[in-house]
Image 1: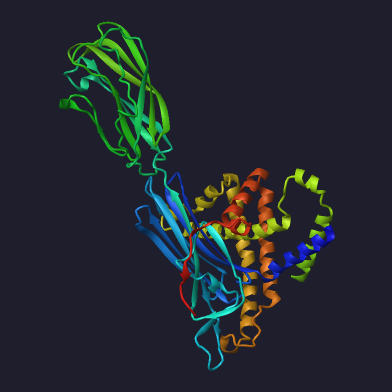
Image 2: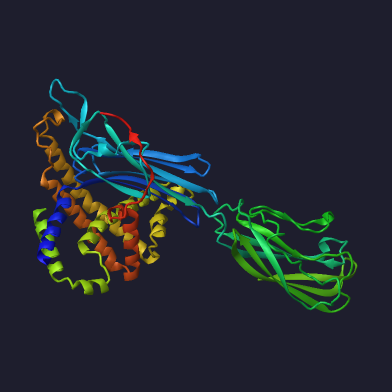
Length: 337
Length: 196
């Protein structure tokens, strides 16, 4: 029994090897997460008996964004069946959050005419594997890739090219940075504004990574959760941090400069840095908040985009009684890590 | 081709004769026959090597490093999770594969040209033999054999789990439609585009 089954399987297995011919179509699209560079590849390949000179592989490749705008496109014909395949590679820099769809159109060019006897229709082309069978309207479209087996028997057709189908693939560029890291922390002196009796803190420059991508459209928000406070309670340094939730958070604009929050008379400015945003950590009042000694308060901050935490930092504000701006003052310094 | 067929027949016979009982078979882990793996890999790795060569050529031809094309050398290592330690070998084997198969392809083209030169005025006419000579299948088989050789060379230089992952991804990406799991048609046809 086993031997009969083996013989049957073996014989059946031999036929496709001898007679099978197919045309493969594939479309792939990749987005490099570190650069947002989009690469689409569309390919038509002649396999087996389809690669015997009767057909030429042809391919078209079109990329559209989610609004239907056509981006790069291309076409290639391997006429003469030189390579046995035709491919188009398209590459461009994508926009964060955008979805791109590549569509490959797969066509077999018929390269050998059919010389019909006099009295019969003329101007025909020879299609030995009958790929004409797949010429449909609308054209069949498959996800990622497909093999169109030549069903045979041979046919003739007036068509010179047989558009046998399409393949399609999509990818979405990340809308959010992969992480946020501390670029620099610049202390801001209370003397920046001569009206202050309590202040100031530091301006944090934060990197949205990878910085090679323009994240200006990314919606980066924060949460701040106070964690400790050694300052007098009750007192004007309680709380030293306002609780911030995603619901009441503002958005950090990447790639823009910043001004300090202080009274407008003496705002300090910070220049725009590509790939970075500013986050000020300060406290300022026009009265002396701490009469003597020193105290501190801490909070945990997270940066969030698209529901994903990009980075978590511990912020500490230290308050020290001293003198500034010509009189007693509470000087604020900030550490962030 | 005949020799390949006979060899395959013998292989199937031996394998089936050594098959366990049905109960044992149920308990055993199903395995893809190596002949099928080679069929898939001959296609998958040929596309993989060819695409690597195309990407590297386009990257080298990029006008400047800030052009998107200049980054094409990263695409396949990223897509197929090829470790950085393996990318140089991958690129080298792809290049060598291209060189070796180009010569075989030239022989295939020459055979096609000889075959088609028998058509009167370059046209198929009734009564003319249209079946391609077996020589073409032999050249294609040689190209497949070279592809599998370079697959194996790559295998020998990679850590086993890394190669298994690459092989699975390549088969899934480039040969899934010949594995018996064709993708679903997402737009159904309704009528013939044109009539003869």
